[in-house]
Image (cartoon, rainbow, N blue to C red; front, side, top):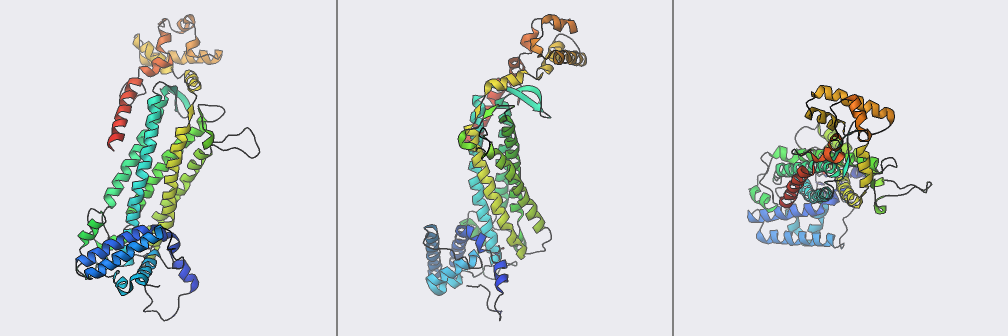
Amino acid sequence: MKLWGGRFKGETNELVYQFNASISFDKRFYEQDIRGSLAHAEMLGHCGIITADEADRIKKGLTSILDDINAGRLEIDPTAEDIHSFVEAELTARIGDAGKKLHTGRSRNDQVATDMKLYTRDYIDTLDPALKALLTTICNIMAENTETFMPGFTHLQKAQPVTLAHHFGAYFEMFRRDRSRLADIRRRMNLCPLGSGALAGTTYPLDRELTAKLLDFDGPTLNSMDSVSDRDYLVELLSALSLIQMHLSRFSEEIIIWNTNEYRFIEIDDAYSTGSSIMPQKKNPDIAELVRGKTGRVYGALTSLLTTLKGIPLAYNKDMQEDKEMFFDAADTALACVHLFDGMLKSLRFNKQIMERSAAGGFTNATDAADYLVGKGVPFRDAHSIVGQLVLYCIDKNIALDDMSLEEFKAISPVFENDVYDAIAISTCVNKRNTIGAPGPEAMKRTIAAYRDYLDKQ
Ligand code: ARG
């Protein structure tokens, strides 16, 4: 059933009909569409715009449609123009003329704006617990690894020793910010556009406060032109999803590096890796690679929507229908990536000895050797230079600082004593770093307690 046949004499060109139709993708939010219509019908009845009996029949009809779609008894007609036309036609087929009154005081413009907001809100309420589960996994791994030493890197060069807990803690911070961004977006978008009509409100005495309340919005939107053309919240959400993907992608990159034959810091469980069709020895980190790869399509959706919106004059224009497909794709992608990444992390085995051995090589304790000299009264700049000479000496002999004899130390600076070995041991380097946010186990235990508290409360 067409919702707009009256002023037309000729038939729509078939290709035009197909090009214009959105049913293939907006059928996804049938539940939200029906939820919005239920609230609208109740409000119309409450305000006496339709009779209580009509409102009742509409609501029963809509509920039966929803139940039938959910139970697989009713197929959404793929030839309908969009989900709004489909539901209205089905309603009228079921309850007769009362069904034709549902659209009183409403346009598809405020209807689709409401549907998308309801869908987005539901999506955020699904993604947030998935992120929380990921944070819980990260926190658990941290708690088990406050004394798992590993090299910390800058420029992908070994820099100073840290712990696995500390390294994972950085990602805890990232995903925690992601959750707080989602909460911000949800709060800012939570105003109800329904009742804004096509663009200029309506002459019916609608109670927009009531509609908003019935749909769990914080209130109605205050400008009907903006209401039907605002897609800011989708741009914000795509931007938040892009950041989530960026964080997942960086984490993936580390997993991939740590999994290489050269590093062997981790092993990915068989359930989360795949093999090669030709090279029998291969076990590839495909999930991490795919998560990294899929980041591109989420960024693409953000760029696409921003570009679509930039030239649109007020108020609704059909360009806005283009907000859906790529948004749905990005939303599905991000949710799947968070779930899969969480599962993969849970499956990781850490080769703690290899990590610690790696932390001990590469002069990650050079700063601590300089600090040792400072502790003996040498100015830091001189200490830096002395340790530089030690490093050169060690590179030449292919040994670590810890492997030098006291005589060798003293040959470069007489300030060194036997206590240098303890001062530059990897465990000392890490354990002494206990300022807030540092990798020392004492500092880390406090941080982990704060993370647990956050996960309990939010
Ligand atoms: N399918 C449309 C969309 O997604 C629904 C709104 C149609 N409004 C209109 N005036 N044609 O945006």
